[in-house]
Image (cartoon, rainbow, N blue to C red):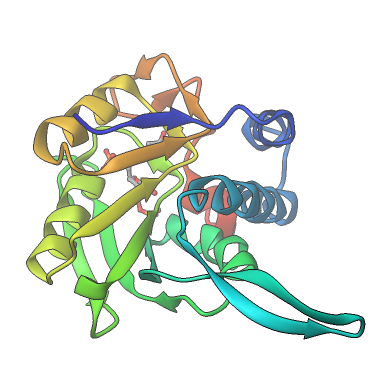
Length: 209
Ligand code: PRP
Ligand code: URA
């Protein structure tokens, strides 16, 4: 069974509360998603491998550490995942960025794919799959299916909020994928929105409602 990690750093939790508030406008919402994503990137990359490297400071030679091991890919699920990309790139600037375009059909709730483009060498990379909202899990499961069909072997899902129903759906289908969150909320409502949640993440990010 995959790990579900709730990141409880006080700064993350404080910013999450600001994000949830209905009076937070698009500009502040975007900034908060970027800041939370930066803090999440710091936490989810804790297991990166390091290697020794000899360097010279102005005072002489020493052995430093540098990141080694697998290269990184960042894959936002459009649209709302786009809001998390800059936060990740600010800490991992050498990462390649793929995109998965999906929207949730409002009637059936099933994910509908409309665009996908990935780095060539996904099988060699640790992939951070970004989407602020994990509701029914349909979008995340379809995205993980797609990444695996493309050859991905090491996927970590990074979501800001999740409903218990969505976590279970992803764990049932993809027990090898760890899920990083800032909160597990109470439930889904009848329209499959997360409660208490933060509303529609894509619309709040881009001001489309
Ligand atoms: C939202 C969200 C997730 C999905 C979660 O996207 O960003 O991708 O819903 O729901 P699920 O877990 O039930 O699949 P939406 O379909 O609203 O598209 P958007 O990001 O383009 O607004
Ligand atoms: N998508 C969102 O943007 N918000 C939810 O609560 C559920 C799905």
